[in-house]
Every structure is written in C-alpha cells, then in structure tokens.
Length: 481
Image (tube, rainbow, N blue to C red; front, side, top):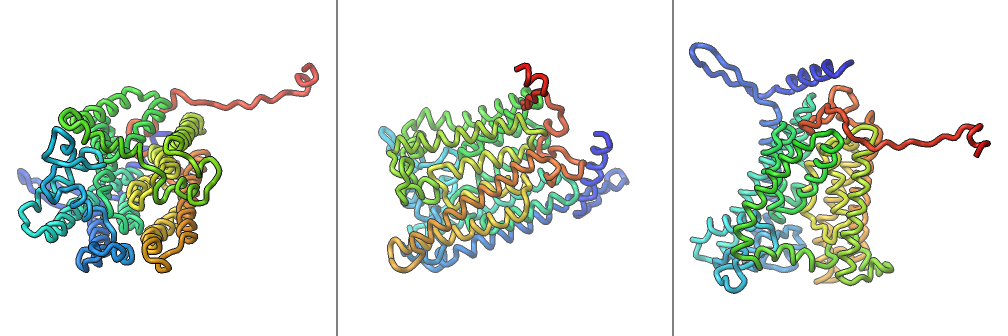
C-alpha cells in the first residue's frame, strides 16, 4: 500500500467519524448540508458534565463555609487557591496585579505570568461592586469557575479536533477521555491552570491544521499564562529539524515570540518588579509538595536530600537538562520520527518528575497530551488512579500536620507520592516503547496514519536523522587486528 492509498483511507475514516448533527440551509434554491463532527456534541456535553462535577466537588467549601476553616477545607478535600488569593493578593482591596512595588502604589504583585494575572483581575473587576467582602470573595470564585469552565470546553474541543484527524472516531473518544478524566475533574478549580491548558490545546490544534503562525501565537499566549508550553517549541524544533521543516518552525517561533512580547513588555516596562515576581518566586522556591526532591529531603537522602537552595536549583535544572538531551537523541535517532504529542508528553512528564514543585493541579497540563500520545490504556488508568490518590492524600496529610493523629500519616503520604511518580514514569515508558517500536503505536499500527497532529510533519520524509551503526568485525579482520 503506497502513501496515496493510505491518505485516501485516512480521509475516508475521517469522513466516517463525522456522524454529528446536520443543518440544511437554502441559498438560491439549493440546499447546503453541513455535517458537524461527533466530537463537537460529545465534547461539549462531556465538558459541561465535568465542569459541574468539579464544581460540586468544591461545594462543601463554597457553600458550606469550609474555606474559612483552615483544616476544614483539607478535611473536606475542597481546597482551592482561587478564594484565598483573592484576599492575600489584595484583589479584594482593589489592588491591580503586578503594580505593587514602589513607586507603584495602586496594586500588588502576583506570582503568576501576566496573562493569568489579567484573568484574575478580570474576575475581580466583575465583582468589585459587591459590598460585602465575604460575599465578594465567593462571587470572585464563582466568576472564575465560569471562565475556567469555558476554558475546559475549549481545551477539550481543541484536543478532540486534533485527535479527529486520526479518523475512526478518535475525536469523540479523546473528548471523553480528557473531559471525564478523574484527575482533571478533581483538580479543575484548584488554580487557573485550565486557562493555560486551553491555549496550549488550541496551539497544538492550529499546528495540526498546518497554520504555524497561528499555532505560534496561541502557544506564545499559553507561555504568557503558564511557562510549561515553552517546552513544546523544543519538541517542534527537534521534529522540524529531522523533517527539514525549519521554515515552518521559524514561523511558529516568530508568532510565539511576538505574542509573548505583546503581553509581557508593557507590564515589564511599567511594573518591572511586579512583573519579575514570578521569576524570582520560581527561583527562590525550595523543594515543595509532591516533588521527588521533597521526598529526598524528608528521608534525608545523602547529597540530594540535604542540599542548599542553590544546589537544589542546580540538581533540578541539571537533571531536566539531561532528560531533554536524552529526549532529543530519541527524537533524532528513533527508527521512525516520533509523533508530536509523544515528544511533548515526554518533555512535560520529565519536567514534572524532576521539578522542585508538583502541585495537584498539574495533572490538568498532562491529560490532553497523554490522550493524544495514546499510550497503553492500562498505564493511563494506573496513573489516573495515582492522581486521585494523591489528590486525597495531600489534603489528608495537611490534616495530619495540623490536627494529628487525624488525616494521613507521613509514611502514607510519601507512599502515595512515590506511586504518583512511578505511575507517570511508567506511562512515559510506554510512550518511549511506542516510539522505538512504531508497530506498537496505536495511531500508526493500522498503517493509515503517520502523525495526524504533526501538521506539516505528517508524512514528511526525514531530512536529518542520527543512525547508529554497529561495527561487526569479520573473522579475517579480527585475525588481522
């Protein structure tokens, strides 16, 4: 079967996946029929359900008042950053994010990138007319949840649109796997991470649609919201280098740089100290909840468990740099060029495993990429179970710290933390196996698809690849030697 036959089969499979609603519009006496892919209806319905489930999970705090009980919010497992940060970041007092250091006295810096700060400000402005400070904080949470629910719908649909290119109903299946992910539902409203997830998913969907400029702009906006999408430019560079598509990568990079600068430069110039708070906070942060370094410190592992802040930064960044080099070698030397979601997933998984901080809500970053990478389902299920266990474990551990012996003891907390690390590493290993053995890759196994999410990379021949040659010495040569 040649490439043309496979492309035809792929188009037919995609057409068969379009089983959604139809609309008839008469124009000039002719009926025009539009078919909506099934993933649109499925994605919206599943996302709305997930948004409602995530909201219901927080009801003991939002309606029951547990947010105003320090241990109550942990005992009910309904903690969120959104409500307390409205007060601690002084948004409740009318302060403006980033403009909080002298000579700027009208605001307060926040430890998030600029676009996320503006989302916080938008929600604060929407409720500023509410007189009661307590009610205003709850309304701030409600407005933020509404915005994040929209982000969830957008992120699910964008991921489904990317998967839809595989054909065979992959779009609506991906929509269900992302929206109804237990880990994502539980973590949806802990922080503002759904905003970054939606922009990232849209950026990857634009790249899959062969629109590198738009992809770059969307990914640049995502980096202005959370820094993790920056790694995906690295994945694009490696794959475009191997496929000889550096011009398209350059367009994406230029679009991303322009978008990031447009968001950041005005704030950096007018509130330099407030703008730099995110970078200073990241650098000065020690080993924190969920990270392997926090585990090392608790058990006083020699060297890595007793390091200073400077050494910790060196260990963490150095370990991630090594992981990036190994992933780069894999991208260039694999027998077949890895698919874009596979490489993005490996970079992000490595970052979280080796980072100083691994908050519960970071599962939101990973779920869409895990679904697109299409690892073995058993590994995905194990990882999701570990994420659910960690979500419950971290709050139970906080209860134990402040009201012992209630809650989850230290030993059990670190056992759950370790299980989370191991299951994600296992999930990543299944992706590596799929890359090294393309016949095992569920997307490529049928021979119809190559890299549906790859855009210009899909079916592109290799222009650069690292080939390992094993030197075999024949008996005559060995004797001569």
